[in-house]
Image 1 (cartoon, rainbow, N blue to C red):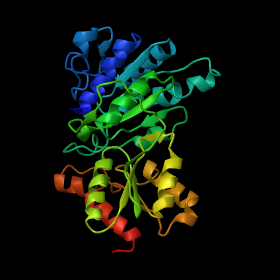
Image 2: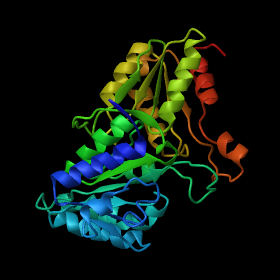
Image 3: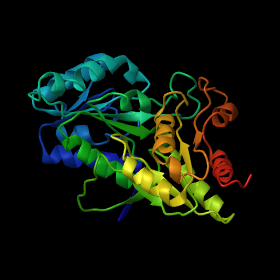
Length: 326
């Protein structure tokens, strides 16, 4: 196992898939000459040339539409949005074309493309560039949506996403690109529809995805010091949701805390809390607790910025609440 960063794991995934299949190409803002805004595409232009690593204008709707067309014609584009905040401009192409062409063509067309880039709160980026849009895409039939939380997951999932014959939304936490983890040297693929138990426990289940997985693991350590055994479930797949893994964990611990760094209304987390409350009603010894970002635009002030988001302290407090320890 090599210890590499999240960005290096994603770079390896794209490099390996581009070497394996000449139909795979990368396009987006600054992916070529600048090696990517977050250096995820570093070295790919030199290796594969400007026909397969393509710098685009600042026009998300245009180059995302180009990728949809290329995918229906038999290529496998990887679209990098510099940030999912900019991706709002391309929603028409994703929602009305990429997600629906297989259905509307009666299965005659497929759209094997990946849309990837940073999503979620960052630092000092204020209201317009520090938002989580996971629920926007998880809402749409025809899209697959994944959000890895480790370099290992990131590489295996991105390789699977590139090979998948459906459009895959690949959510990368901006604050995780430098996060390190072990990644095997040999090739591996991970399923796009499975959650993962990141830590076993017996007293309470902490369920989240993306960057907050690290918070949940820290919270589990803090709870362990207080005699509480917390299980951490990393959703990974947001569409489809792996409800089986979630329910099995909740039925074991009888208590659940759901964490989502998006706003609370109509979020992935709020939907999951509803599903658990409905489908595990007889197994729950306490109401499901839900932690989200506060229902406000992201402040620029760093103290306020941190205060509105989920935190280790908020998770510990919620876990103790469902255990009636507060």
